[in-house]
Amino acid sequence: MLAHLVESAFRERFGTEPCVVRSPGRINLIGEHTDYNDGFVLPAAIERSIYVAAGKSDSDVSTAAALDLNESFKFHSLVPLPVSQGGWRNYILGVLSQLKKLGVDLSGFNIVFSGDIPVGAGLSSSAALTTGIVFVLNEVFDLGLGRLQMVNIAHLAEHDFVGVRCGVMDQFAALMSKAGTATLLDCRSLKYEHIELDSSEIEFVLLDSGVSHELEESEYNDRRDSCERVATSLGVRSLRDLTADRLRAPSAEIDEHDFMKALYVLEEIERVKTGAEFLRQKEFGDFGKLMFESHGGLKEKFLVSCEELDFLVELAIGDPHVLGARMVGAGFGGCTLNLLRKGKGRGFAHRAGEMYLTRFDKPLKCYEVQIAGGTELVKPG
Ligand code: GLA
Image 1 (cartoon, helix red, strand yellow):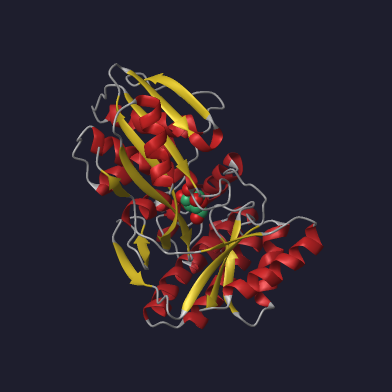
Image 2: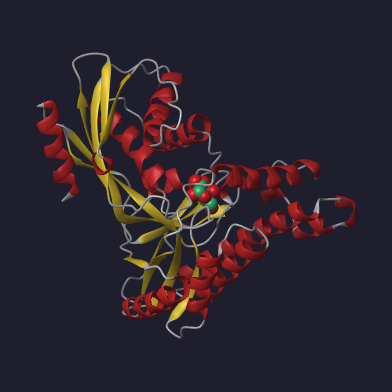
C-alpha cells in the first residue's frame, strides 16, 4: 500500500519512474542504552516501515517530500548544511554529508517518502529514514555500498549531523535484521547472530503511552556523558570493559548519580547475554523476567522512564498472560514492549487500554508486532 502510494506520488510529481525502498522500524527485546557503551543489544525489525521513492533529477537541485507531513524542501546536493529546526530534512542532509565525506558527490535527485512508524514512540522512525535514504541513493546512483557501510553512514548522519549522540543499534537493526528473528549484536565488534523468535509460541504487543519523546536530545546526551565520565575516571575505553566489582571499589570515587547509571549499564549488558541464551532455548518465561528487570533498572537507576510507562509495565506485571514488559528505545515516553504467549496480546491490550483511560484520561494506542526483515528494495528504478 505505502509502497504504491510513494511510487505514484513520485510519478505524479516528477514524471519519471522511481526506485522504491522499504526501511523498517525496530523493537529492542532487551539491551537499552548499552549500544554506546560498546555492549550488547537484541533488536528486531518490525513491519511498520518508511517507504522511500527516489530517482535522479536533471540538475544539481534535489527535492524531498514528506507525504505524511505534506511538506517538501529543495536543496543543493553538493552543499548539505544543517537546517535549523529542520526535523526530517536534516536526516536526509546528514546522509548526504556523510557520503560527501567519503568522496561521493551526488548530482540532484528527488525523493518522496511516507511511513507508518509512529514518530517519537521509541520505534526508531529516524533510523528507518536515514537507512532508507542511504539505501535508495545507493540503488539510484549505483554507489556499490555494502550494508555495513550503510549502517555506518546512517549512524554518523544522526550522530554527527543531527547531533543526537546515539549508538549504532537502530541503524544496524534496520539494515541487518532478518525476518522472524532478533539480532544479538555486539556493538563493539559488530559481530551478530540472528536468533529465531518462535511465532507459533509467542507474540509481542506495543502499548504507546502517547508521551512523545522526540529523542530528548539533551537528556539522552547527558546519559551518555555520565557513562563516559565513569569509563574515563576508571581508565577503561567504555563501560563494557568494567566489572561491577571494579565499579563498586571504594577507590573508584564516582559521583553517586553516575554510579547508578553505570551500574544499570553493566547489569543490562549481562541481561542481554543471559536473555539471548533464554531465547535460543525458547525459555520465554525466563526471558520475560529479564525484561521486567530491565525496566526496573531503566526506571530506578538510569532514570529514563516516565509515569505512564511505569504504569503500563505495572499493569503487565499484574497480568497473568504477560511474560515480560519494558519500555523500548531511548525512553522519556514512547512505548512499552510486551511479550505474551501466542493469542493473548489482544485481550491484554484491551484491558490495559481501559485502565490507561481511567488513570490518565487519554486513549492508549496498541500495535501488534510483526517481526520483519531489514531494509530492502521494493521496486528497481
Ligand atoms: C535510541 C538510540 C539508540 C540507543 C537507544 C537506547 O534509540 O538511537 O542508539 O541508544 O536509544 O537503547
